[in-house]
Every structure is written in C-alpha cells, then in structure tokens.
Length: 95
Image 1 (cartoon, rainbow, N blue to C red):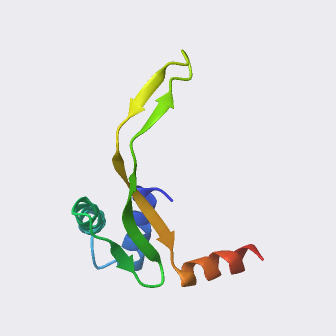
Image 2 (image 1 turned 90 degrees about the horizontal axis):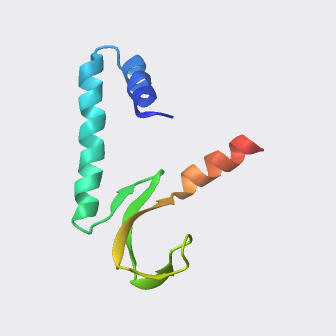
C-alpha cells in the first residue's frame, strides 16, 4: 500500500474529513513515530507492532567492485517487530 492509498482509504472511511485533512493526519502520525525513534525511544502500537532502533557496530566491509577494505561506521537503524495479532491475521489470511 502506498501512502496515497492509505490517505484515500482513510478518507473513504471518514467522509466528514477532506483529503487535505487526511494527508495532515497521516503526516502527523508518521512524523511522531519518526521523532520518537530519533530520540532513541520505542513506539508500541498494540495489536500492530513495535518500532524501535537497533545499533549496528562499526565493521570493516569490502568494496565489491575493487575488493578493497572499507571502514563502515557504527549506525542506528529503524526496526519493526510485528505484534501477535498482526502475525495471526496475516497467517490466517494465507491459509
């Protein structure tokens, strides 16, 4: 699903709000999640899942083209763990 499809779906479910308002709602939700992760905290959406960050240690990698060693710095990356309800619903829909 694309962001625009999400906005369209929310707009269809809430006809009393116009499309611009729905775009703003989606933007605020995503921005709130992003800001929370930037602070190093986690976001838990019950029944859906948890967003958090994971630390990747510095390492020595290889340039695939030249084979030369490259220092890859430490970094923090976003991580999502699906909740139990989401896992069960996805599994049930495939069966």
